Amino acid sequence: MDSKQVLSIFDEITKIPRESGHEEQITAYLLEFARKAGLKAKSDDAGNVVIIKEAAPGMEGRPTIVLQSHSDMVCEKNEGVDHDFSKDPIKYEIEDGWLIAKDTTLGADCGIGMAAQLAVITSDDLKLGRIEALFTVSEETGLFGAKALKPGFITGKILINLDSEDEGELFVGCAGGVDTTARIPYVPVYTCPSGKAYLMKIAGGMGGHSGDDIDKGRANAVQLLARVLYSFRDMDFQLCSFTGGNKRNAIAREASAVVVLGESLAATLKSRFEESVSGIKSEYAVSDPGLYGVFEAVDKPLKAMDACASRRLIASLAAAPHGVLAMSADIKGLVETSTNLASVKLENEGLVRIGTSQRSSITSARKAAADKVEAVFSLAGASVTHEAEYPGWKPDMDSALLAHCEASYKRLFGKAPVVRAIHAGLECGLFLDIYPDLDMISFGPTLRGVHAPGERLDLASLDRFVAFLKDVLENYE
Image (cartoon, rainbow, N blue to C red; front, side, top):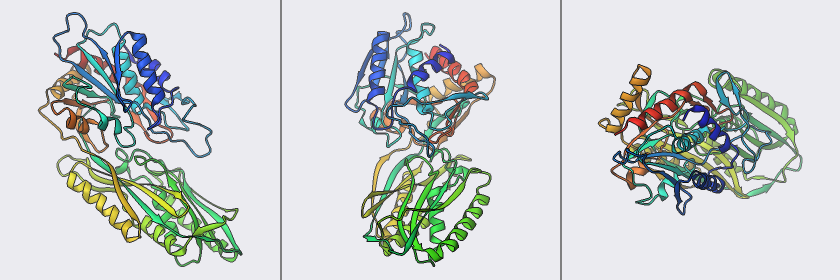
């Protein structure tokens, strides 16, 4: 087993559609992979798969180790890119030591973990105890596969999660999370017969993971466009649409709105929009150097939102919290609580849906953050619901698996790994609800830009990750 074998399997995975909620083809691939390899496998009603490799001769006395990753991926692409995630393979290239998908997400989160699992269970050079390779579905949209697991689906008491993104770091805890959705009703009204329609867009943001990247100060296009529109509250315009963002766990990279107003005001509107964008670009010159704005005339829609609802929508989006709410007092540099203003979409004529997510390593703080978001949108007349809640994972610094992994890393690379918790959500907290006796850890190669186009994998880190995983497995007794 080596990184070339892992990359070869990952290349196969990039050709298989596996958007969250549509994992049928990757599930079939995993079961067929097991059949061809002569290994036992099973799936459950949710689509989770476990493939079993029995212990090598002489290794029957070793404990069973569960290797785990999720089989779905976040499907994001740049505007104007012709790519259909339901059928098209991911296009990637190698550049300066990175494997990168420039126009779409790469799916190395968590496809590279999957590839490593499959490489382990088909390698002849590893003399291991019993391995259970667990693949869960719909992690990216609410950890639904992990929630659906039943007692007995896996039997091992040691679990290595391969869904981390910083080689050289061992993760022993994570935040819990909840999604909060607001729906603002409006009355469709006809647009002014003498008015003209204009598109305003803010795009080019870096985006990124709403957990890992929330502390990097990156631009949220939805929030910024709402801020710009709110600054126009002294002008008489009709709001026809407001759309931005996509996935709950991704920072919104672009947002657009169409407004209708008198043609005599168009020059003033354009000037003020460009002035606002200029200021925003200056604010985010370091974190989001690609930010840009677009102002252009468009065909006039037949209908717009009623004036009261449009004011409430714009004001609530401008007021809604986004970003870090609190840093951990116990672990230096760890975000404790955050919220992501993720998306705004027209759910149907007469209703706008706003998607957000909150994370915290403290349950009460997570609930308070969700309540804060609910309060803002409730004041705007929205109906608010909370869903897809999942628990955090409390660190166990006395873990035997952690001690083993620390010793392995020091032996291989001559330095101690960083041991820390992560603000992103991992499935480990849910696993403990179902299998309370698990000893767990999470590690992986270095990934950057996950959940956004341009996602990339550091190939040198993959070499170290594979060597480390092999050593951990071969020497655990």
